[in-house]
Length: 124
Image (cartoon, rainbow, N blue to C red; front, side):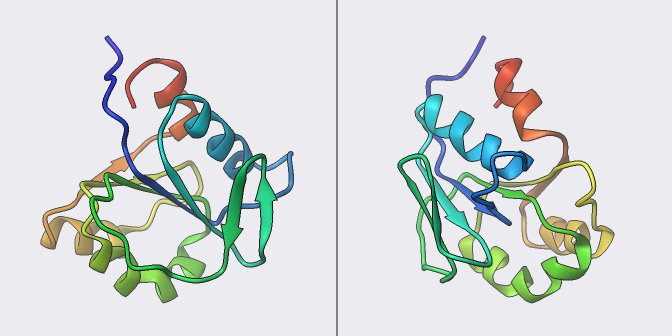
């Protein structure tokens, strides 16, 4: 059964390219009613969602979903941890043992999964 709870989600590595999975994730998350903060390497729009380059201070973050390789993630470690999300989703190709260990140490649940699959199967 799908939860009706709306989960504030930070999409790291958001791209305005419709062929990228991060683009699909932003669209599907918003279609499911989840508020999204999309952070990418250039400002753009994905539908009604603005992609920003800043790292805004946010509260009540449920999920950080990653769409960047582990090397690029390194500069985001502190930002991700200060958001205090409930979980970090490592989408295929983003798996990172260092960030996973940091997450566990900080009480954040790491999850190796595909955001798109979780949404389509009602497990998000």
